[in-house]
Length: 240
Image 1 (tube, rainbow, N blue to C red):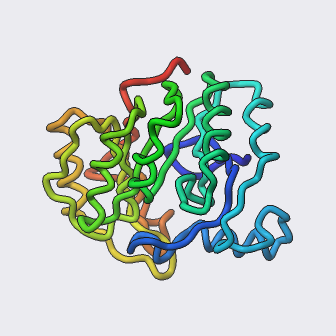
Image 2 (tube, rainbow, N blue to C red):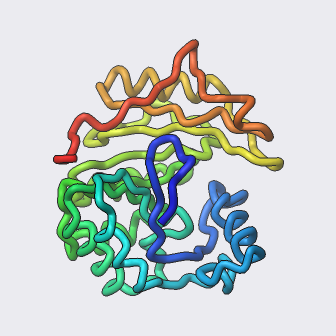
């Protein structure tokens, strides 16, 4: 568990680590880069590198120790619905989230098909926000899989946005995050793509969160869009 610099959350919790690439959005994966750094620093949890998907049962105890309500991004260094993660362990993660309704747990996956396949096996308490990553129109079907799940809060992370998502269907979607890719090899994000998504969110009354423009120097590029910052959050808030 650690405090997070990610704008839409407070902290991260990683009961699993490691992943493999499945689409264009994975090309310059920040988690892979961070894993290399953590491994070089000698951190035991990351000693086997990024491609080895591992579960960490000891990490399941951590949320029970937090004394005040938190907003938590689950598995910033992995994908909980990776095919190598046993269903029983995913159930264990859900039990932890169910047992701690005072916290909001935010999950993201690119493996939306497995998410839907397993969805009915979990109890979707109101403090679990489920999202899918959609980087371009080629993977837009992830949204339909998400829509069919039983999660109470459903959201989209359109990051890194590397292509237009015109007339995105936002039915039963509670939140949209948009962000450009960052780093030395960052692929460009066009302003037009961002404005189209923002206007679509306004039309459909969906909270819009603009995370960053990205680029080689994301701090310099900032996160101002059309003269303001967009920090909107889901309206269907949990009891937090």
